[in-house]
Image (cartoon, rainbow, N blue to C red; front, side, top):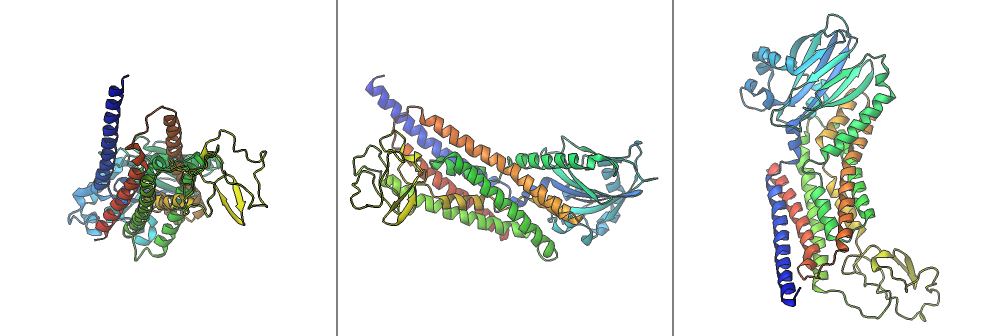
Length: 482
């Protein structure tokens, strides 16, 4: 390759790098503009509380009103008692095959529709304005020995729709999630061992997998975490720490919102709380992005230089990250209490600058080396902590339904375990994404690529992307509040 061809290659690579950054930021802005709000998960989510008592099975169903739009005469988004009475026969004909019950002898019960009593259902109290709550009463000729449920009451154009069901029988509670791909579930008799430890293991495994799959939908911090890890010299510990903080914050957020919802259900609805939580999260993300922009802009404007000749090439540390800066090439005559013992720390070795994470004590001042960015500045654990808090601040409505459904049946411990398991499934995807990005960055570092001025601005571009994400979340939340 001639010098002219090499320069031509560099010009094209620089141009395509800049265009790729602009296109990425543009895609983020467009995605935020068209993304549904945080509460939009309710649009394809239903909840059912199933109680089996003798010859009667009651289902308190909270579902998207759009499935029975023909009965919504006033267009309010919810069916009133008058509308239910007026369209009772048509609703019964629609719901009877959509939520079909059979006993072990393949017999069907008689279905009767009634308006739900507000105090009878936690889901009825937390349902947004787009949902209706009905009570379905199934009467059997004799108490069923087993129950097979076929739930197909889903929107046609929503393959990711689901119905969270909480089933109570003789003081025992089990949970199940109906989906278009898995619409059936069999409830065995109360004496069956299926409601024992094995069923609990399957239930927890289902909650974990549901959380993992649910995290793949928009609005769960994947873009935010990815933008941060791409812009910093992150390690596997940082990726796992981000996922852990997101999990802890999300779990605590669900617990707090669940308690607030139960305590203030008559005054505040979750759809009124979510925009405020989203606004707080957006403001936190904007602050993080602005702080990163300031730091990375200063780094890009002042590239690192070597003020001392040293075989270890220890980079300078930012005073905002470390409480003490030093160079290992200076003499130690002023530090009689400190010396570098070769067996303890050999600076003649060929380890990279970012690899040492030891502590030093100079004149009573101590510090530790965090992994550093390409310009030699240590990463901030505080930034990682704040990013994890903001990414998990807004809880998923699906997890909230799990908690409130269990509380409604007097089994809050089950709800807590399900929410924790759900959050762990969500965090596993974020951790996997972070580890994948970190591993990919390490592989790309081994590829010989010329040092381009445009690529040096990549950390700054990722910081701008984080700020744009925060602005988009804040703007969307403000629009919901207005």
